[in-house]
Amino acid sequence: MYLKKSVTKDEVYHLLYDFNYDIEKEKLTFNFLLAHLFQNNPHIEIPNEIKPRLEGILKLFQYYNVPLLLGLKQLTNELNKKNIPVMLVKGAAMRLIEPNKARMMYDVDCAVPKETFNEVIDISKKLGFKINGIYPNATEIIKGDKQKIDVHHLLVKSDKNTDKIYKNIFQRAKQYNFYGSSVLIPNTEDFLFLLFNNGYDNIIYSQPFYKNISWLLDGIHIIKNNKDISWNQIIENAKQTGTLAQTKIMLELFNHFLPNTIPNNIISSIKISEQEEKDFNFYTKKHLFFSKAQQLKEQIQKTKNFKKIKLFSIFLYLKIIQKTPIINSLFFDKTANRIFKI
Image (cartoon, rainbow, N blue to C red; front, side):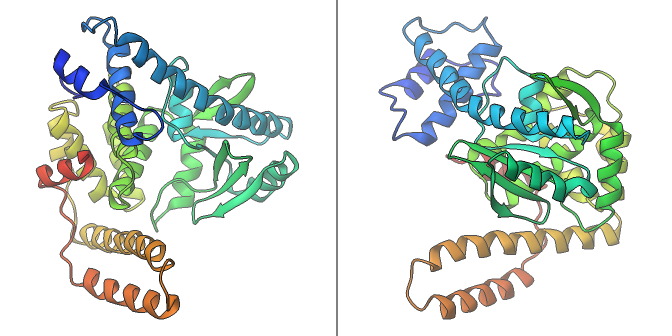
């Protein structure tokens, strides 16, 4: 509905009738998108009695965004004092680009030079943050139950040239003012490259609906507001990091939903070598396994004989995934249904 050129009053009423903020979180996602639809397209007629409810949804998420942004501001202020560069990425960067728009965020992401990472974590602890999770590319820090920040020392999920591309993204980044702090944001091409890279992983890891669609909505905004995009730079980023196959898939998927947004000659010019296909096959299977293992772990922890069942289940799934053909997101209807399933 968000991508349609028009919506009917019946569709609006259907989504908003007897809406409950507390128990219908899934419907809240759709209504949030609907509220943004009308905010971005004021020419669309909407019944007067529904306007306050949609405005209320946007205000609700503005309220949710405040503590996240305050925590991030506190960290960026301190890093500025230490002359440590800090780059906002993902939703935090989009929130800065569109400061007047609420966003469905439950954490915020920033990146720092790899050599400063340990110092940054120490600084965050002095500010009252605690480590909540350590991941291959980032560490999650929290303060209370409303301030969560993922501090990255790498951005591209790949096994190839990740340090080099990370430094290049920092060097090409643009400077912005973030509520009095000096921060960086990836340039247009790097932003889109990271968007496609992260969007592909969200699909593999069966992330919630909003995460699976946010890459598309953010991409629309970036492409719409930047006329001279160097698509060759995005392709070069993908080549350098061994992510060309998944980048091509995401470009094709983007054009599936919004035909001709990305020049077709750009996509057709991307040729996937046999080695790149093998790298893609390995990467996708590995992360599908991690995704399934994570789901299995959550289910198995609730059962008796935890260790035996856990080991057997992961072993069994690994055997299955080894024999599964390469994931082929090019038959878009199935992928689309998976992304947009209710």
